[in-house]
Each structure stands twice: as C-alpha cells, then as structure tokens.
Image (cartoon, rainbow over all chains, first blue to last red; front, side):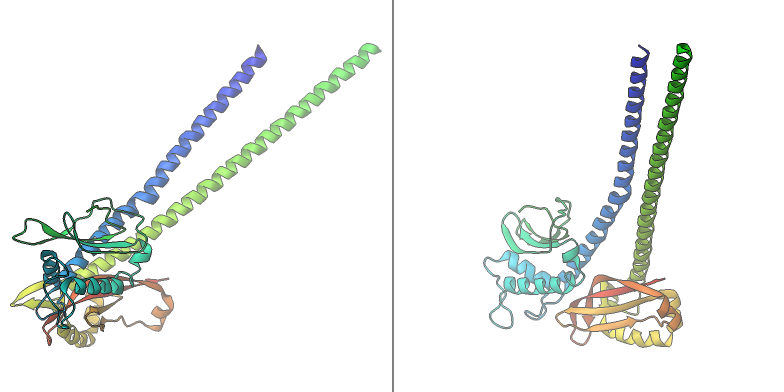
Length: 179
Length: 182
C-alpha cells in the first residue's frame, strides 16, 4: 500500500513537470513568433508598397521616345483602347505602342529593380490589364514565393468612354491576383 | 554466537543500503545541476540572440529614419525641384538645377553638410532613355572617418528627371548612400 502511494506520488510529480515544460515551451514559441516574425513583414509590405506606388507614378509621367510629346501613360492608354498591337506607330515606322511598352518597361524594370536586388530578395510582378481579359503586360522576375494575396492596390487609368479602367500593378513578392 | 553473527550481517546490510541511497541522492543532485546549467545556457543563448536581433533591427530602423529624413529634405529642396509655371511637380528633379546646385553646395559646403545631407552620399541616376549619373553631394571624409567606416547601405527612390534643354521628363532614381561607423 505504502509502495503504491510512493509510485503514484512520483507519477503525479512527473506529470506536473511535463505540464510546466509544455507551458514554458508554448510561452517561448509565442514570444519567438512575435519577436521574429510579425514586425519585419509589416515593415516589408509598407516599404515595398511605397516603392511600388512611386515607381509606377514615375513611370507613367516619363516621356517616351516612341513619338514626340507622348508619355508612357499615353501609350498604355492607347494600347489598352485599341485592338491588336496599338494604333500609335513609333518614329521608326515599325514598332507599335504595345510592343514599344513591352520592350521599354521591361528594360526599365531590369535596370532598376533587378539592379537593386528586388528580384533576388523577394521577386516582383508587373501587370497591366484591362479587366476581364485583355492583358497588356505581364512580367515577373525572381521567385514569387510570398504572394500578397490580393491586398495590392492597382493604379487605375481611365479609358473613357469605356466604363472599365486599365489596372497597373507592381507587386514586390507577387500580386496574388487572378484576371 | 549465531545471534551475534546475524546481528553483524543485518548491520552490514543497513550500512550498504545507506551508502546506496547516498549515491543515488548524489546522482540525482548531479543530474538536477546538469539540467539547471543546460537551462541557464539555453536562456543566455536565447537572450543573446533576441538582443542581437532587436539591436540589428533598431540599427536598420535608425538607418531608414535617416534616409526618410534625407528624402524629405530632397523633396522640398527648392533648389532642385521641377516647376511648371510656378507649380512644383512632385518627385521630379531638374537636371539643370542639380548641376547648378552642385556648385552652390561646394561654396556653402558646411551648411549643407550640417543641416541637409549630413554624412550621406546623394546621386541622381538616369535609367531611361539615357544612362547618366549626377552626383549632388559627397561627404568630405577625413582619414579618421575613413578608418571608422564599416560599410554602407544604398537606398533608391524612383524619380522623374527633367532635362530643360530637351524639355523631356526621363525615368531615373535618386540613390542615397548611408554610411555605417564602427
């Protein structure tokens, strides 16, 4: 009877220790997850959201050398409005607005975001689309492992009188959108 | 005689039992001490890694704050901003004004070094259609400074660069280099 009681007591003590260990490890896991994970991701999305908006705004304001007095925004709108490769023909007499945009924008992306290692660090995606189907441009670089899951804000360009807008997305880490 | 011998055997057994118990207790305390030290070491390692991580993050935050301040200074630096009929164009810099400001900075170096740009390197780089670079400000490092610099991080912000001669708005970026001291 005495032996049985002693064995039970030790079992209860061991159970107590196990419970304490489980509680301590849970607390540690909680602390580690808060300290190491949450803050960098919010900082990351804020910093790259700012970069995306500045980048697209600057890109749209840039003068193209396709034809005189035409900005990239004008070419995007022309490409989105017209069927085929665009109604504006560049000074070389061959290149249409859509082709010009594809070559030039990809060149600018490669000379900036790739040089700043955005492609190797998180990857990025540039999309210009007229919903629901017309894709003007879709360019990706790097590994798009961290999709932003539809939280990205597009840059709408009016295609008046058409009721739909041209949407331009630049997402660091991937847009996570379907069109 | 036989009783005496039995008594001696019982006494010996009790002594042996006591010795064994003491050994077991010693073993227990050694194990407890061992586990305690393992926990202490684990705690120290955990604390060190957290403090290293937070100090690294603080340094990055301070660096970003520094860059943000410089960026604000640049955005509202009327010497280099683009203007159209008196209106300022946001995130746009006039190349003609940048070249003129380079000279002004050389003349009033102390003012710009202490109040505006501090210990940063600022340059404007054109990406499209040309590929040119204009350095606006370079900190004048002494030999001691050079020895203490541990490295630096460059931050890039896309901007429009206005060419007043061609009257064109080109794509470029401003590179802000922040130095780290040892």
